[in-house]
Length: 239
Length: 239
DNA sequence: CGCTTAATTGACCATAATCAACCAGGGTGG
DNA sequence: CCACCCTGGTTGATTATGGTCAATTAAGCG
Image (tube, rainbow over all chains, first blue to last red; front, top):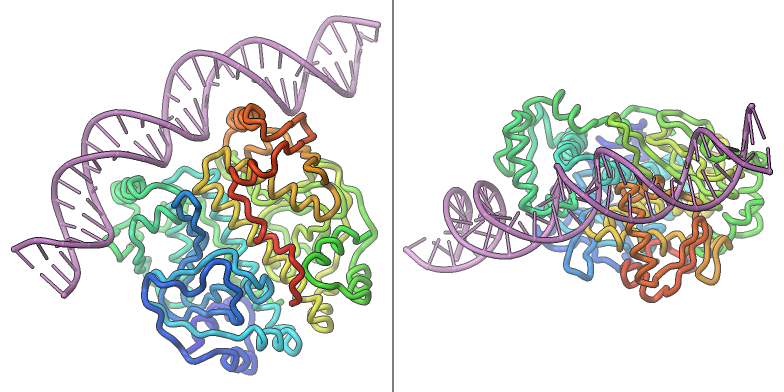
């Protein structure tokens, strides 16, 4: 059940059997959340954190003016609001982009982990730190890359992260986001997203028949995006 | 010596005397870093993390095309690369924007903290988590706010963070960044920054005689920015 | 088969970038 | 001492990326 999390953490360090069991004990039985509903609402003070087991979700914030910005896309194996364990109050909402299987971990139990399992604590800490690294890459893409490169970067990132948890392979993955949602990810308009996708197709970089994406040339796409996966920390490096 | 860190953490939770001493023991004697030099270089694998004691520094990434994006501004009391403790490899550089006083904490000693001081560990974890929250606010500002509101948001954030560590008061603070550097923060051109500052002046929101900034109306500036400091987690809330 | 949601396309507009001068202040060397 | 230079700030003219508005098409579904 916690396979995607073990897949991910196992790429970064060795997760002992006891640690895997400790994580499993943390978690509630899986629950199904329907697409479009919130896993966590902005401003809430949840008493637990939520692990995404299957499906895609998005962290988002809404503006007074009606706009919306998605600040991260979560893939299976992501603790979507692990930071609420120490932040207490959520500074954003998390919505299910697809039907999602989740499991929750009470903050009290996470606290016990920090008191008894320092290595596992560091691994969980690392996971929140990598969220920060992902945010930074999005900032770089938004601030200093042309929109086409920004979209290319998103595709490279998502493919890489999905591949780790066996939801992508052979340069192919499912991206069940509408163009409006993609616009809210990149901070662009939906119309422009449409034109960017058309341009990626014209350039022969992707074959994109929503929701399926096939990357036709990883080489050229990642070069366009200046994608360097170091920030995802996928090399085994004990902490 | 670790006053700014204690000021900051003390706003979030109670830091016991023993914990304050434990942090103090972590740290090397203060060192001076000249403005413009790197505290940490991108790609490096530092064996320690750096606490900023005085001055301002910036996390930045450079692009192949020559552009640069600053992804966070660090104020006194910030561990500028605490995340390297678990990330190992730096995904960005950190440069001194002004002359900076710093102290370093070996990762080995931080590891010991995680093994012996769970509460302090959670406070340090929290600090990295708040970095992520700051990144998210910047993403929202970049993606969905007009440039003027984005700049206003930056001013509100920096004033608030500096006030916590007693480097700002009475709506006044020092912002020793060039307009080129501000452009690299906001993902805009330096020329446009210049016009935005002129506009803030015209609107009577700030009196800005570099490097001194005086906010003339917190009310109107924070409304323009839609600034809500929840994400900085400045309310005492034990973890 | 009509309804709804999402994708697509065209025409026009706006924000911000670029290019290019010019100005102001502080430090330096003759 | 002061001309010069360098950096950073200011301003104008023009361009371009991406936004907005609006209409059309396509696909899924009760």
